[in-house]
Amino acid sequence: MSTVMNQWFDRDLISDQATRDYKKAQNIEYYSHWKLHHSNHINHTLKQHSMNLVQRLIDKNKTYYLLTYSCSEGHTFDLQQSKKMCYYIRSKHIQFLFQNHKPNPSSVTKPAMFPRQWFFIEPKNDRYHIHVLMEAIDPRLFIKKLAQSTRFRTIFHRLTEDKLFPRNQDVISQKMIDKFDGYVEHQHYGRTYNLLDISDDWLISRLLVEYIMHRTDNEKWGVIGVHQSPACNHSKVMNESEALSKVEYLNKDEFFKIHSDIQGENFCYEYSDLI
Image (cartoon, rainbow, N blue to C red; front, side, top):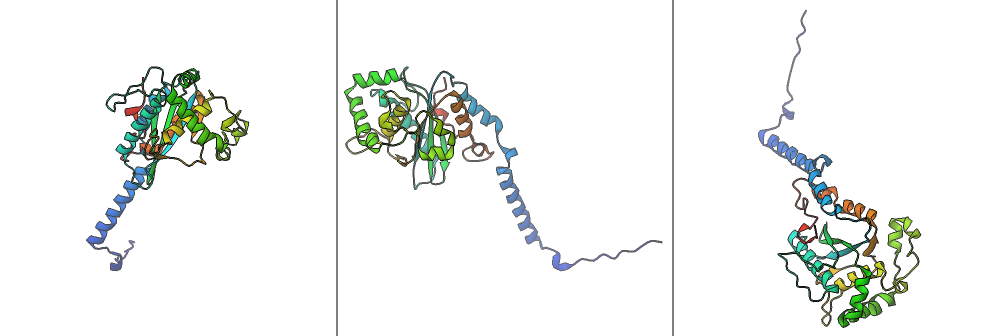
């Protein structure tokens, strides 16, 4: 005995062609968005290559600075503009100690005694940050320049007497402790910049950042458009292990998403020292 099943359609549920095309387009858009943000669509090969460029040069016997600058507040992020800013900061870093250095954007050069620098760009909506991982300046070179150069002594005293020392700022800020409570064990915890030895890496790195950010009509040392909150400790000193970890952090997955505008270009290899 066979059973006959009646079939019918509710015509109210049948979409017209225009509606079906619209829903299809919505599905395609949704999938494209999902594909862009899904972790399986990160260019991991490019990410690893970017990290390797720097990590292979990091030496366990050296100390490193991490310097952070904010740029272009109130403007749309522009990748090429940010790379030019890397070039300006690089050049000014070198001129901090070598006033006669002649920068050339088509050829990345530096005095042999000046440490290597690596630049990372981090978009932040209408602004961006430039993070510079840099080998520490040899304290002997710093002291030598301070003794030999009247200009350098003027800059040193101008920054320390007018900008750093009167503030009595803590080397290990509360902001750093809030993020990593292990900082309370740091040798500089509870100390201010005016208590540091002249050749202390934490003081030298802080002076370097202040030099870049300091620009007035009469003292055109720094870079136009670079700024930072005075409450933020934007210069830190790291060992080899911390530097390796920071390179990995600065190469976040979001910067290597397939089809993203900045894919792999968060690392500014054009103005970084890779040999």
